[in-house]
Image 1 (cartoon, rainbow, N blue to C red):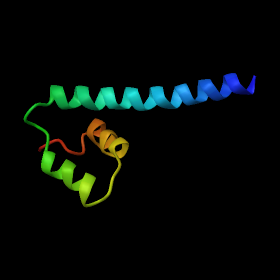
Image 2: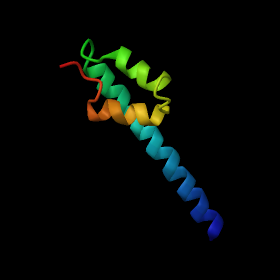
Image 3: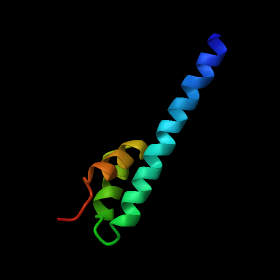
Image 4: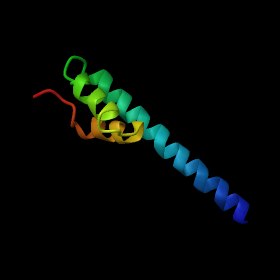
Amino acid sequence: MEIILSVLFIAGIIGWFKLQDGRASNHLNSHVGKIDYGKMNEDKIMNDLSNSQVNQNIINGKYDKQ
């Protein structure tokens, strides 16, 4: 029973990150030319954010140009 729950938990976590990556990709594709890639790369490199944190910022519109 514990093995089944563990597998389901791991599959849920993997599914969550796949869903988040897909949503970020859709946001980037639907806002072509309206994304500040410099700010996104700066957060990734200079501020040491992970890909999942950057994807969450993309989804929330943090990198959208005004």
